[in-house]
Image (cartoon, rainbow, N blue to C red; front, side, top):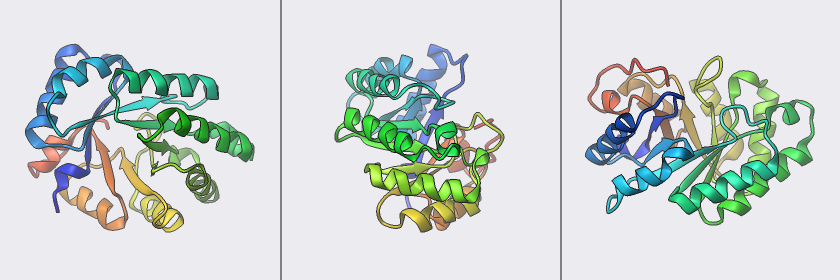
Length: 220
């Protein structure tokens, strides 16, 4: 198992500096991670740094709340892809899901996928704010919308991924979508267990530590 290719090497904090983004990209190249996951302000810079490598660029959209308009999310996606993003991690409209406004949730996802075209889209569901039933429903809608991934967490709320949530999500999406576990992956053993539970991708700011067999003490 090539654990490195499961990892989206992540830096989403508000005060991230250019030097930190360069370090992120340098580490992603050195360890050949799947992508770097950054806010879209940094996309063009990452594209420049990662040119000629196999490392992709994941941009977050509607981050971290998911409560912006659908048109705003679609515009964010278009701009991100224009600047070099290869994958999109969008945040679910959590309030709409809780209101059982499933049509809006579906159209929100569809609009993002349409704007993304052939690029991979992952839906961040923020499971710590959802009931089991809501997690199931969000997964079902993501599959209906044609998204490639469902994702556990932003890393900016009350808690991150759990093994139980990953198992649940995988049981719902089956072979129709992949699962990304994000937030709280602390060790190499954690990463292995997440993959055994059904995770196809891991979002973490501690990818280097995890690969080295050390503990990830970062917040994400």
